[in-house]
Length: 508
Image (cartoon, rainbow, N blue to C red; front, side, top):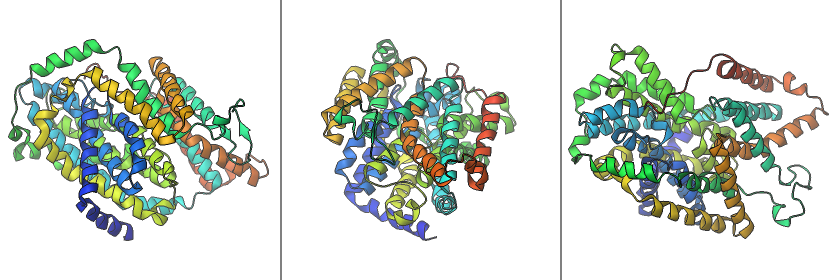
């Protein structure tokens, strides 16, 4: 109850003009990056990460929360208008959003997406506020062996969540674990894998890995999409002019979608978000399938049914609240964006875990308030005020855009570390991530392996030290055994048993 009161009191921080400016600007930046195919809110957050050094940690986390929420809903803009999802989480939105746009109801479809995003984001944020303290208290019962098994469970789930790329995902995760071992040993003051280079004594910083893996690699990946850019510009020219009132769905349409659809999809998205590595695309997919299954007119989906838009958008925005649960209570990121938010916490000397929700609740409560504010106020308000302009975001010149991103990446990595060596590591990590992505290796597993690696190693070695080298300690402790059994259950249902097929993005 005290934490809820703290969150409510944190809304007063939004009355500060400077803080509100950062939150609103973060939301607009996240929307723009999510709406442009090829860019993501993850990239926006990676680029802006160095700027958090000049902000106090509370303001930085509030801005991160607004970017996160904007990134989930912004991808629906191009998914609906040109049938190209601006973000992976909006794949299912295109199935019914684009047919509505072809019927001349594109603005109406965007209005349905905004309302669903608002509802899903609000439900996810409220559930996070209500349940996070309870989960944090329960996590205090997890001992050292249980923490290792929990991190192992997270790594396994992240890998097997890469449908069709499990082996490549495992390889990338192992590569991330290997990179995390460079530098000083976690328990003994001995350097490892430095090859005589003094610059590697402190290891590879988190900032170069994040900026390189998401920003630099994205620039290299997008260099050969000039033809697609021309196609997008032509598609924008054919769009009819829309007015602001066209974005407001009539109450009768909202009633047809139904409260049950919004609520069911939001709960599915929240539950999926708590699973490390699942992401908004999986949440939207499962919610869409469930809505089709329970509908009286399943044949209408894929032809412009607003329920399909509502299901996908409610779920992927509810994922925001769910993904922050394991990150705040256990230090395990639920998706790439929460991995970067975790980086913001670590960079500012804050260690996520059970004690975070009690000892430093004053830092976390404003972030959750900003997340709820972004969902309830900024999503509908920005679409109504800026909707006609957002539709044409995709026509921005890519050559100028990516040149600016490249400059921000290099300068930002230097400003963050004040090390020329770490700046070069940013470029090296970008080239490595580019080649991994080009060959189908998921970069997110590399990043999460790098982030979770030090704790995974530390808890493993501590457990074996306390048990005098007996590995059976992981089976004799109830908390550890629980997570190991849970790991086997997930392996069975997600890898051994016939996996649920991912949505076909080409059809969308």
